[in-house]
Length: 461
Image (cartoon, rainbow, N blue to C red; front, side, top):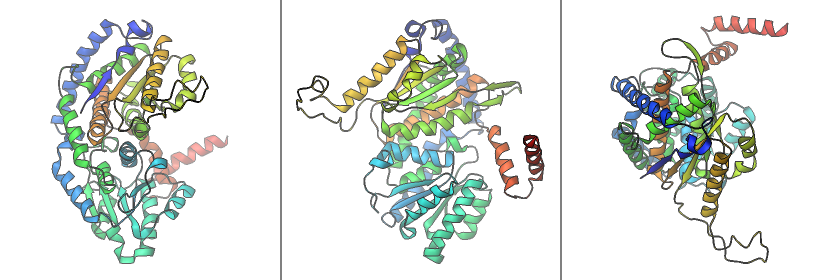
């Protein structure tokens, strides 16, 4: 299992002094990086943050796999009810290990599909329900707090749909993933006797993909969660090394932090050149944005820090976004995600057409073309002074995906230390949630009802 990071095109030697990193920048970054590693290691050792320990929780992995094996063949659909980190991780794993939904094999009890209800748009949600058979659906409801309005509302509808068809057998078709000692979802699961798996209190939603949050849907879909955890565990060992040549996550964090803060690249484009990594790019978008977008640093100083993550897909978005990237504002850096070896390279038939624009391709492969497209895009961006770097996975399998997820989580945590912010809180999300509770009539939120009325009065003027 190997993941390689190539930062060469972030250097001043490649993109110029105005947009690239100098040797002096890198020396400064290396020192700061080791401090970040030490600081984060202490926080983990103190028990404040728990995601680095998840791949080593073999008991939970075994329990999840046993549960999935017991139910195998009794359903053809896994319906995840969740939002944000409670949904994006499951989708990222499904895309990475089976491919995007339009090109997956037909679903069946041997190959159950994944349906994710992560929005409360009624037309979307009701159409999804209409597409499922309640007698062949297993519902996974995921909420750490148990109070997320979107998840609760959707689950109440889905549960009623199941009860109408299954009656008292409904509880056998529901599994809950939530906190162990708190929250209304935990209380309901206990009352109704749902099978329940728990998320550690020191693991936040966007860092939870390698917990039961991501592994329960993955196991139910038939993925090898032991290999996912094995890859993540191997990567974790590398992430604690104090040698940047071996610690890819720390090296990537230092390079991203430097190019962002020293060269004012306030946008990062996550640019996978593999459709199977497309879902992971959306998962990463939440991880990077919610972790590193902060008003205050750890000393309370107002900093309004944040790098905006954008997801682009190669080669598709060469034809929709690269014009902007090449000639628009030079405020971006690009992180290409590539795959060294595909299971099938997609050979192009050796058939001549007589047309020059076609006859250079027969006998070659789609994998070779995809690689040429990525390297050409990187070269073109570099030539115009646009800094970029590349992550390369040896192959797309469970171990590499587990490792890459863990690498990106560590990179994000290290970046938070380099910025001197708390990458694990999310105060900016909470105010909107409280206004929603007030508008929907939840008790205890009268203050926010009054504040919202004041906002509406101001708007009316």
